[in-house]
Image 1 (cartoon, rainbow over the protein chains, first blue to last red):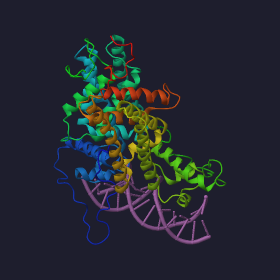
Image 2: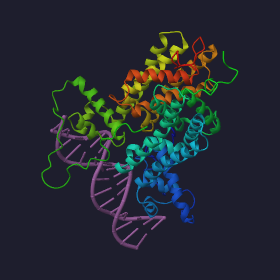
Image 3: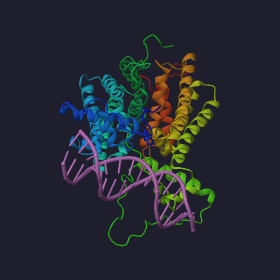
Image 4: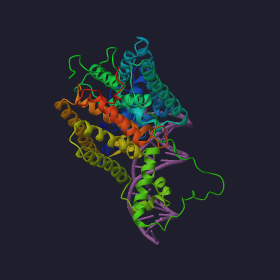
Length: 238
Length: 238
DNA sequence: CCTACCGATCGGTAGG
DNA sequence: CCTACCGATCGGTAGG
């Protein structure tokens, strides 16, 4: 629910017509910045602007202004606007998959593997809201090859969750009608986090991760070896 | 997971330069269509194109071509491109709220109210994928007043689910750590359906609605009066 | 419902 | 890293 950002909607009707218009003030220094940091500053500005205004509504001049240079000067550091988007979106999927590999590798208990996978999924979507938000909204803004790359990685990522759930079902640890719907619902509720989470709100990232871990175990129909349902406090049964 | 559409990416490099270029063929009749249907045909075309290409990448000429007229002729039927988007997005939220009111009014059992609310939510997102998809992606493309209208209705809609869950908790029918996270997770997993569902796939709309109803009851920690967990077949307990 | 057209925007290149 | 600029696009209006 709710949108990620609200700043910067609509082309900035800034100081048009009427007397002396300087250029818009540049944010501090235009030079003197280490060349190595310049690229990452550009990427970060692009990410923020893509999230706030959308890829198509963000101009190279906007991105340049955010790092203190003019639009055309960006082409010394990046080859195109599209490249900036593709890097964000492919990098996001690579990170999610890498985090998932770590999450499942620390334990053999399928319940714990699912919990850790979901916690990693939630942590990423809370800590990297903008990446996740842009990654989920701008798929159609990619060219075909990059779109295929991102969708292929998404498919791989989903399969990891689905096969984990199938394994749990085979072991008798999970009980679901459809592993696919279970994995979709678990992943989709995590994706939603990127839309409404903000630091300093009702929940910390840790609390969020833990609660969604519980919810995922409920969705999976997980019961520990003694037969209790997931997410129940030991003493709360009727 | 996955994007809603893939047609029509990128401005259509269609027959530029070189010999005889007629205009692009118009899709059958340009006139002879009942005036009453014209507006809804335009809305439908706009919806399809907004979903496939994004609002900003869809031109009035695209929409016109889809209904067999030229871009400027659309202004006989609509006042602006923006109006087309606003109608879709506000109408979507109005329908979801109306469906929810019906869903909760048929029973007093809070479990059944939640089930029916979720089923209605899922049915809408499966049957009106494009509306839901556009409604969730183009919030930032609205002007401020319309964006406020949509977000206000979203907030109302979420509150209906949250208060239902809180009521269930108070009655001892549900058990959750946070009603807000429960409602967000339930709504977000439904929103996800609009991204990946397609008719003729593995599940029918009815199957989907039922399974997500079960999942929502699990998330809510629902147990029937006899103490069994939601979504379990009566004989499946260990 | 159409053509002609205005005014504005924008990604990217030239050439310092 | 900048200015000047090209080529193309687009929402909306004029005036039939």
